[in-house]
Length: 229
Image 1 (tube, rainbow, N blue to C red):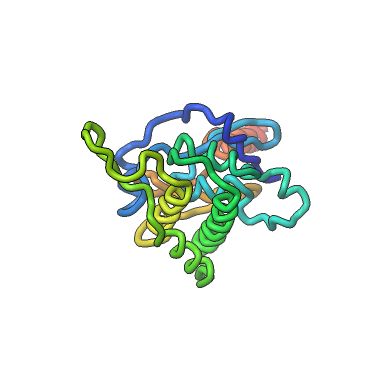
Image 2 (image 1 turned 90 degrees about the vertical axis):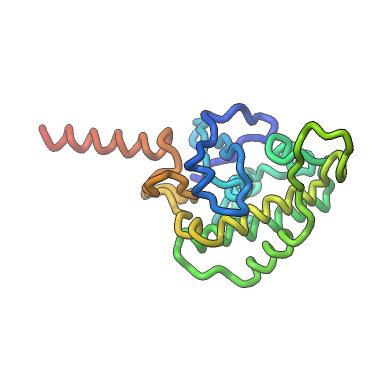
């Protein structure tokens, strides 16, 4: 059973702030700021922090699931341009998305998901996925802006395409350098979620302590109790 991304309009405040250690682990070129989103699995709502804007974006759909597979459409978050606009609103605010923006977003998301799967499994990525990611990363992104000036520089409201380019550039940083070796899959036997290990010691094991980490503790406790009987 794959977790279902929470409806973009239902997003709420994340559990905690981004630490300096987490920022350092992402490497140059990565987008800094809050990461993570609410997912729903088996009727339970829980917070999944992938540690990366690009991976968060990948999990607006089902990573590793064929889009044509039965039930995949039911677990799609980005069904309409408005869904894309809502998801970007709390991360990379931009102008309302169009149908073409949505198609671009789905193509970019697919390449990020496949690259993440390859990285977590230690496989070489497909050249076509690298080409697609580089194509989106090469387009203008949302430039940094220092508040307090008197002259408007650039567009008042960035385009959705600029937001997608920013996501793509974050993915380039993710799949380059030291962070590549920190892209991992949850240790639980029944979970295939992928995340960037941003822990200082590089020893994160679970997609979430709230979910798989807690399940592991419960199973270990039961096993110890059974052994003492």
